[in-house]
Image (cartoon, rainbow, N blue to C red; front, side, top):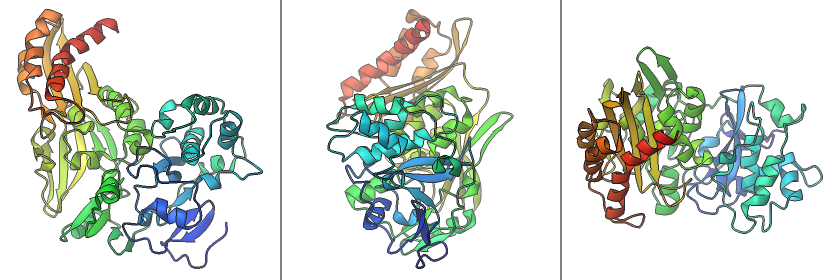
Length: 464
């Protein structure tokens, strides 16, 4: 590996096998713009909000099923400073014009590229899936965050499905057998990665300081709305926020774990979340977005809150005065507002056990995947001898905050699990919340979707 002599301790990034000095990386410079400044112009800005995937690159991250996993992320959202000490591969690092990478070869021979603008991003997302430990077939969701405007997706899918396993001496495959680099504490003006949770909390007590993890929300605010917090405090690699524990009576999920990490580490233990994950944005976003970040934004249209509300989850908040537990149903106080105090962080999400026997997640959106919901409904219901004994229903997109449909829950408990039995509760559910007319849906449409949610759930059970 070559080394740039200007790369100081903790201030270098390994890019395509060579250490590069992280110079001038203070916000708002993104990882994408920094990489393009090195002459690596394969990754491009298309949307600047994580929806098109033209900016995708690979980062070496701690793996669930291997020591290292090559993880595709949206470089347009991540601050350049966040790359300090890490290992990155761009499309240029996968192969050469004379020796194409298997992904590049299949894309070329199967006609998967025309104008080429989106191709490097597709190649990086496909490469992450190519190196996924234990892969036996290609997961099409790996490409859910990549858009192509001219080729059409059939040749791209053909290229993906033609990929076999990596050869034994593939250097990037071999790289997955050893640990990724540890991410060191680092700071530049306007951005700091603290070494400990205590340091992070002290920094967040400063005026204008904002916590940042996957940057899938703050990155959009910076790119499209010119948001410039006084200080960004990176918490995504703090081990105190990255534990996942299954114990008697509870599952605890660290707030700094990404959705992809939680999905793999839970291994299907929470079926309701398994229904949410494929519909939550795209794999590129799920590789960056964290549980704490999605809840902390307080968005009324986030996908996780309705499901976690239905699961009776509570949040553990940590701040200068220590920890406190807050039921998620009491966490949101208004539009993008919560009981979280300045300087506090979401540390963990607690899901009580046992789980309900019947669960489902209905997301109504203009696109099936990689879209914002118009309405989201999550169910957790216990049935005994065909009668509802317990019901929890979480809603998104129908009020200023995510809410529990408590009136509908009360109407459902004790009802027969039949079309006639659930009809009164369905009518009550249709009146839940305070839906608005906006560019995604009308209030009348949202109410209609709420009214159909219980009959749809019942019908799905009858068909399964």
